[in-house]
Amino acid sequence: MRDSAAANPTPAGRGEMRLLIVEDDREAAEYLRKALHEAGHMAELARDGEEGLALAQGGDFDVLVVDRMLPKRDGLSVISELRARGDKTPVLILSALGQVDDRVTGLRAGGDDYLAKPYAFSELLARIEALTRRTTQQSGDTVYRVGDLELDRLSHRVTRGGKDIPLQPREFRLLEYLMRHAGQVVTRTMLLENVWDYHFDPQTNVIDVHVSRLRAKVDKGFDCALLHTVRGAGYMIRDGAR
Image (tube, rainbow, N blue to C red; front, top):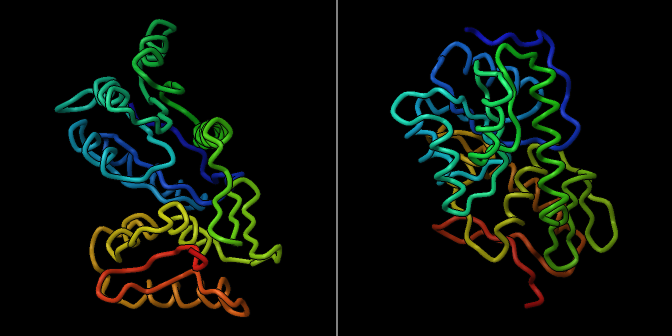
């Protein structure tokens, strides 16, 4: 049965999220990805359980949206395997099976929430936002710090030395990803996949432009540069005082 979704999705209550949708119904999956994009988020698609498991393990997602009935490997098996490997990414299960016993089975398999089909997109989005709020509150990783630079994921605020630094949504996502991997080299491919949701080289200088803009906002006027280009490798953000 095809999922029902609201025609006009409501904006998310937090910053841009990156989601993985594991759904074999191509039309429903594309519709959901488009709706999430219109709500200000990025979504990657997997068509079967094996592909979903591989992408979930290799990706950096805020939430996984997993259909229960999938080819090659069912959704509950995917979730159970992720949990067995220590992956704590929040999972919202979608299923046409909506009885109490079905929901209990899904939650016991490692799902964090369960939504029966057909569903309204507004409810799905609200549940996703609730999962991310719960996760950040539990993990404590709501604030990233590198030197005197601070990024707050909940308030969507960035400061350096106590001074507010206004960023565009894409710049915020870029900085968040760099700070999450502080002290590590972040390649162009990693940025394309995790910040722009590209899985091919667009043959443009989009990364260079955004990094340049971000560097001007984060480092200009400060004695110590935090954002560095690693020639031939990528970029790194690190505390220059070390």
